[in-house]
Image 1: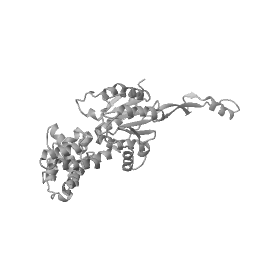
Image 2 (image 1 turned 120 degrees about the vertical axis):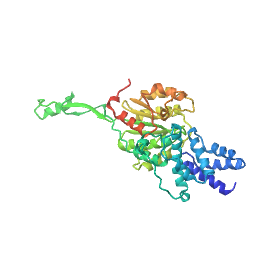
Image 3 (image 1 turned 135 degrees about the vertical axis):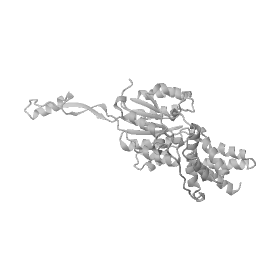
Image 4 (image 1 turned 180 degrees about the horizontal axis):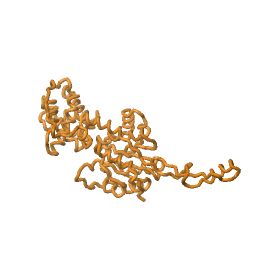
Length: 389
């Protein structure tokens, strides 16, 4: 293979990575070897060689298909990508393709900035369109352009969760109500010659509940787990008694990494500690490890557990129901955050999903800024702070 073609394939991989696909150096080298094996005799063979080497998720096929035809055939890359971004009235299918094109347009603009044509003034009638802020609130994280994704990260870092305090088993001095504190009353009576002139009271101490986050970082979670790392960092910096774990094929405690004040540095540290990023998912095994090693250390009667996963388990749900039941009995609330709930026609067909559902207190979507805002309101509402047992 000529060095020029290999260079172009690496550039194509960089374009896909800029568009949000998880493509590392290993996949890029596999694509170069695959292209060398099939040759350039047939375009279809070249297409499927790159596809087999670079694409592992079904939802990435549309991005790959458009990027392939733009990068390898169309000389006017930027014009075509930007043309797909004009606000018009379209069907839902066209809007989804438009979101994919937006991601490609941002990636192409940065990848070939020197080849971009001179900008022309274009007048667009936006009378029937919505504001960018409103669209961003409901847009799927997986369909955001690079600029929208960065803005979403910024807004996620501004979310604040003011959990209502819960009573503990400890006591603290009370004002003028609660139980009578006999010990303090007798100590005060010493000052008045043994006569209990003033009664001392005590009350139950209150503190914010413990929050434990278990986040799936498998290939099927993709961009959701990346942006939710920023949400987890916000929880860490905003309050104490928060513990964060990542899991794919194994469990990784990233609590200390996310304590770093700078969010970008914290996310990089957390990602570096998880060696099974974008791989498979073994939910039952990782929950078993959490229950055996960490449950008694970080959980309590007032703990809230956020389980972030799509429920797609490579072990077909083996042992998952047992471990999920044990986890639910060790905490006050077990909330399952599932990005697959963004689909109106979602049905619990996968074995992992069916195994988890009976043991969670709430099953919520987590695919957009609006869904995160709804989660924040639900967690901070006193009306929802009830115990299942």
